[in-house]
Image (cartoon, rainbow, N blue to C red):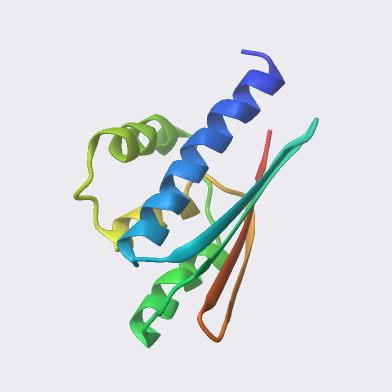
Length: 118
């Protein structure tokens, strides 16, 4: 698979996971930006959402991702086929398919920037 197709497929999976999380949290005014570059993809999602301190703790796992290539196909199927996936498992899954991230929560605005190397 060429890098562009690989980047598109990875972006689709990551965006699916992000949207699942935002929708579970009943986010409003969700914005999304995707950049596919030669060596990586960057995805930024922003939305208005009320998060508890427990939710914020869950998001901490994104700050220290451990990429597990063997998990990627499994995660893709979970996002596509299961609308009952827990938000905790979803975030754990996202942390397994990205290489770095930034998590910012200011007021009621959650901004997530995720990067995946190709």
